[in-house]
Image (tube, rainbow, N blue to C red; front, side, top):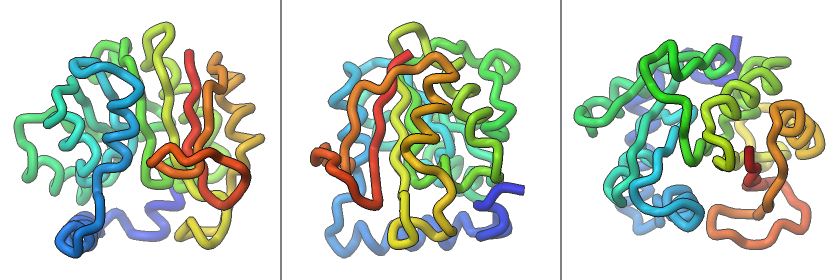
Length: 201
């Protein structure tokens, strides 16, 4: 069972969306992840939002002109995403078993983004498998972008994945580290409890 399911019971879609809506109303910038991705690939590029949740990141990327597909296992989150943007493709699948072709989607994404602590919220021991599945969805030269917490201050669950381990999972999947940042605003990473990693296939 994933740590996300243990944490939420996969029934928190509306509560999750409401929390981010409240943050947006307070004036907080809600589009850092989308802006970060838009700096890496040109408008029109194909992007897979892995662990898309209620669609906050992907909907913004679609507004910016990207060809997006979202995938998540949590039906309550996808229900909100489909209500907010019914014209966009939202797929329900386990990232540890994700097979783009089997879902009728071409496995030639220019960028795969896993925001929102997707990697540390997977089921324990499945991180390498999920990373390999996401890497397989990339075209040669495509980018995997993952942002996640590394300590208790940045995670809703106990820390489970170090950057060394994640880099090893990426290397095993044929990916090479390109850059690493401390935030979605591209602040340099010099250590600390949160990292945004960019790997290339």
